[in-house]
Image 1 (cartoon, rainbow, N blue to C red):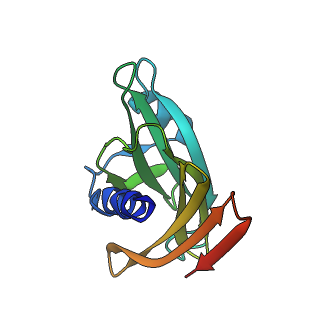
Image 2: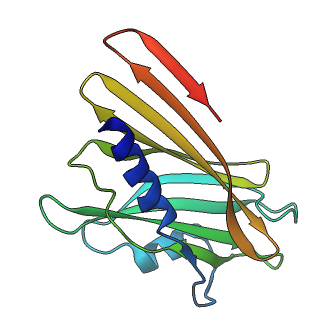
Length: 163
């Protein structure tokens, strides 16, 4: 059952392909956030780093939206820094819930080695699992190029890491 939940979580993330956003330029990240955050929306996670090798600091973030008392959604945005200043939306995922009855959540977002690393966690009973997905821009397309899974069984104090 635990393995099934991990597979479902991975499929949820992978089924949220990046979609090319309409080209929109923003003077700053704050201007971008003001344009998309409505009501109870909030910036959940953010990361900065060079994603496309141009030496400029790009920006990625997870935006959470509360749809109802029991449903919230997440959406990943990627903004590339422009040489003349400001940012352009390069990509965004579809907005979708991370399912699992409160057991699952996005824990960390990093930009390193020109890749976006997204860590999601699953907790069920006496086990916990942290899965990190590595996405990289390759020839104009975002691709999943790495996956690291860390499992912890609290009842037996055993842990397994696989890549």
